[in-house]
Length: 58
Image 1 (tube, one colour):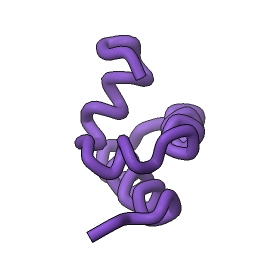
Image 2 (cartoon, rainbow, N blue to C red):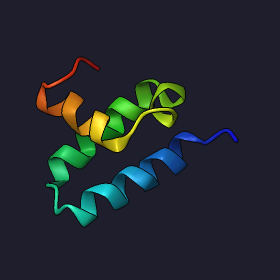
Image 3 (cartoon, rainbow, N blue to C red):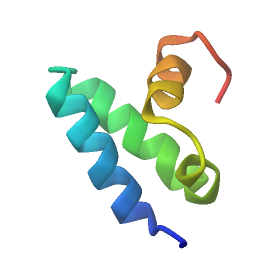
């Protein structure tokens, strides 16, 4: 099942809310999702957080 960019961002927002992640990190993640939503639909939100924090390249 294919996910839209908005659905991925909603999942990302929930992930961040549960972990009390700051709004600026949420916004950075949304911008990354917008660049390649198909890629991020197949990744974990932990991978996205690692990408933002510099642990993995985006």
